[in-house]
Amino acid sequence: MKGLFKKQEKQQVKTKPKKIKVKTIGPRKKSVVFLWIVLIGSLAFGIYKNFTAIDQHTVHEREIIETQMIDSSAIESFTKNFVKDYYTWQNKKDSIEQRTEKVNDYLTEDLQALNTDTVRADIPTSSSVGNINIWSVSQENEDTYAVVYSVEQKISEDKSSQWVRSTYRILLHQDKLGNLVIIQNPTSWSLPKKSEYEPKQPESNGTVDSDTVQEVIEFLETFFTFYPTATDKELAYYVKDNALPPIRKNYIFSELINPVFQKSGHQIQVWVSVKYLDETTKGEQISQYVLTLEKDMNWMIVQ
Image (cartoon, rainbow, N blue to C red; front, side):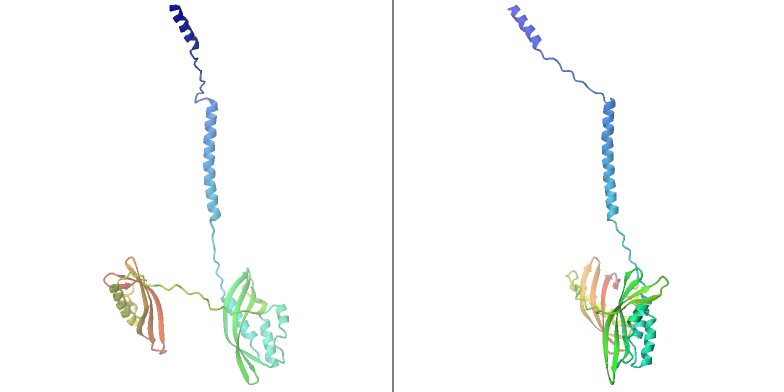
């Protein structure tokens, strides 16, 4: 039996599994250091690209709009003088020749030739100019401007006469010295029409109670009664920081029309029309106001 046990022990020893050796690389090996460098470099590059992309996007979206103002006073004066000379003549040879000489001072040589017979020597009518209105001055390019104007002409023939209103458009060239010349003949155009725009009307929204509404109405009636003739010193009791200027008019207060009240914080905004009788013209004058009121001891117009 003892021999049998010894034999089994020997077999058990023989079947015992062997340990597997694991090869480790130290953290200071060159290959590990290289891998860390690659990893950190990749991360840094990714962060850099991200911030660079954001900066480029921001610069791309940024846009500066500059508005250039046009001083049109010289262009308007030049146009009005031209219109007066161009549309004025008498049915007499001398008058027509004088008109031609005047008109040539505004036109290029090509346009002078084009307009030679626009008013013939045997024309049966005479024309005088009434109102001249400049409707628009727009810049076509760096040195060219378009002007839309209307002119009223009194056209007389024999013993009859009539007023005619017409609208035209011309092009002018302005050189670096500010000199002007017309480069396109008066061309029939259209007048601006009435816009269909209607602003949204304010409405009382119930934020101001009835007692406060009554107080404000009494304040406004008192104020607008003496406002037309009030001096700066008198206005200072009712108006803060010159929110309303003195007007010094011979008006008699009539009534407030459709006042609208809205509360915003400690302030009240009022939309109101004020009817006056104009003692000078004997007509009614209706002024419209948008006022901001505050109350400390008394009500004040602050804006």
